[in-house]
Length: 84
Image (tube, rainbow, N blue to C red; front, side, top):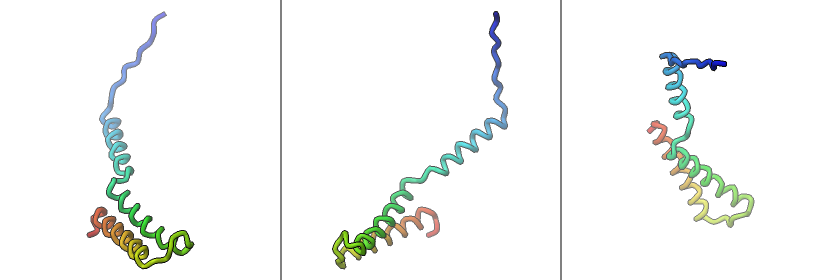
């Protein structure tokens, strides 16, 4: 019994579709700088929340650190997005 083999011919449409899919996936993966920015914003917002829930002592220094982290993360996020 003979086996049947199929030949595969690539078409330009399939090549273009594969390139578009790869570019789409590349845009979905977050950049490292944006992950750092969002992490700073979340860390800066969690410090006052932990002070409010009395897991951390409510001090001026911790409040300032939380504000500084949030402000730094926000500026970095705006810079990396190209808004500034």
